[in-house]
Image (cartoon, rainbow, N blue to C red):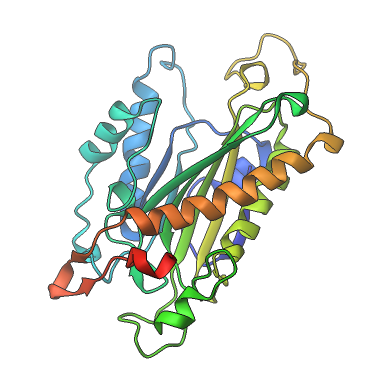
Length: 284
């Protein structure tokens, strides 16, 4: 499922996901002008998989943020081989954060942004389900940590004259859970990611593309390409059991955004532009 906080973006594949409620491909994150290249690469990857010889339709899901302040975005340096390599290297376990992948050139709250992750696990009496969140942070607002206006205290906040690039930005949020949720409740879960973004001081500005993509890893709810029966099978979690997952999503999104800032390092990029990493002493 996909939820749009503010739709100034080029998320590919959104209409079919919203219509059918399932995701067919790996989720790719890149920069704005590399979306078509990434989509072609993931189509090639999907068509080449064993058993897909008769597949004639692929809905690539590709999200983006505009990293043109630090990156020579017009050069379109991301190639299909880079996308295929990223898919090949995907594995379980801890995820590298900060200036990596699609977060290499991003800027968040005037500081160096990047990739951030966090997760929450519900207690056993609530199902022991896990909610994991990965973010690509490239947006503005007033950085807030534990309710403290860190952005205002440091002089770097939306409309401040201390910002290198006061333009609007975006945030891609990917929410994964092992809870057996249908598409409707996955969308409800995705909505809560925007509350986590707001807790960090994000304000979904006019030019911001803020999207949350949520999916379940529950195997019993997977949709086969050629189903053997006309019926779906598998139990889905009831509405009344959703609130703990909502809280987990809000908290994990907030923490993932902060982790992207803490892990990022100062970077000098396109045209010699420099964006400083968030000084950790501001968080004490």
